[in-house]
Structure formats: structure tokens, C-alpha cells
Length: 280
Image 1 (spheres, helix red, strand yellow):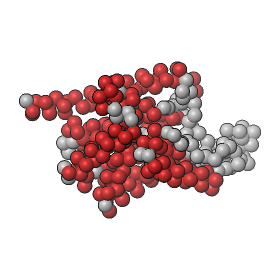
Image 2: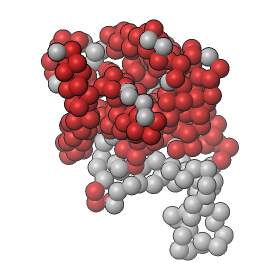
Image 3: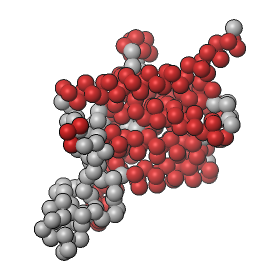
Image 4: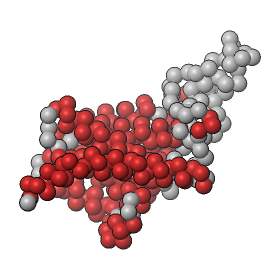
């Protein structure tokens, strides 16, 4: 899936997560909370592609996200070399490898949550690094007037808006309570990204580090084969998967983007209507 599809599905996941947390805790997050959740989810849904040079998340923060991406790529290569089985796919395991696994998403979210309990700077840095690519990608998928007026599809304006949102949350005192929420949003968005990729023909290694039966030996030599850890899986039957970048794939992803943005808008409407009534 391309960046726009990832960002829009992540935005929906983030908005739903905000609504769910508000419902479970009784917190009145309002439109601002749902909007921030959507932006966090959108950005988090782009993070797994830090394992690919030139991806939206990789270049969104200039050299900073580039360095994070290089670290992720090194970790992915090491994990592949150390855990691969003889019948795992050929290659270095960098793209759509470790960083695309649910295990990595959950561990990273947990580390962010723990780090945020130590210092709010962890939350602030994560917010900026996650919000910037989310704002940029959503601007490209949204109405054209947003791009014309705000220019947020460009990296520098997206970073500026991410800094403004983070500063606003910090000054309002909300940053202190966002640590675990930011970590959870990170994990949810990254897993949504993996789900999007596994709906295409590429797939991702959902079951790593568990061993799965090797496709080559499932029938002929199942008793001797030790299985494969990096075998890619899909969430859709083969006839329903699309090739990323193809004309049909772009059409499918555009429909997904529009539907997700409409649902996010629907989630925001009640709070926005209440805000307008209060102001009036």
C-alpha cells in the first residue's frame, strides 16, 4: 500500500482509538482529542516504511528521521541474519521485515510508553516525528484546497504544524497524560500499516519469530523441514490482492482513502457541532 492509503487507514484507527479511550476512561477528549488521535495514527501508520530509503516517513524529518530509518534497517538486517531458516526468502530482510512485524510494533510502543513516564521529552519528540509524516500524507490525500492554502503536503510546513500542535499540547498540560496513549497509538498505527501491506501481493511476516511450515516442504518433506520464520502472510484471498503502484491498485487505495477520511469526519462532527454551539 502507498503512503496515502497507509495514512488514511491509520487516521481512522487513531480516531477510533481516541474514541475508545474516551469511552473507557470517561475522559472528554472532544474534537481536539479525536483530531490528534487521527494525526498520530496517520503518522504511526507510515513508520514501518522507515526501513525503505526515500519513503515519506524516512524523509519527513530530514536527517533525524533518516538516522532513525538507518537504525531500523540495521536492526532488520541483524534480526533476519540471526533468525532466518534455510527456506526463508532470499535477501537481507530489510524492507517489509522486522519493522513490519506486530512484535516490533508492540515493543516500540511499550518502549515509548515507558520512556514517557521517565520524561515528557520522549512524548514530545515522538509526537513531532510521528505527526509530521501523518500531516504531510493526509494533505496529499485530502482536498486540494488544503494543499493550496496550508502547503502541509511539503515536509517543512508539516514539521512546523507538528511542532505547533506539540507545543500547544505541552502548554495546555496535556502532554503529561499522553505517554501511554502515544505508545498505544504508535503500536496500533504500525500494525494497521502491516495489515495494509498484507492486503497487497507483497504480504508481511505476521508470525515472526514463530516458525511456520515451509511452503516448499509442506507436502514432500514436512517431517524434516524446520519451517520458515520470515514467510510472508496475507489477510485477503489471492484473487482480491492488488499490486502496489498499478492502476487498479491506485483506484482501490483511493477508495479506501476517501472512505476512511469520511468516517473520520463523521467521528469529528458531533464534537465540532458541540464546539460551535458553545461558541455561539
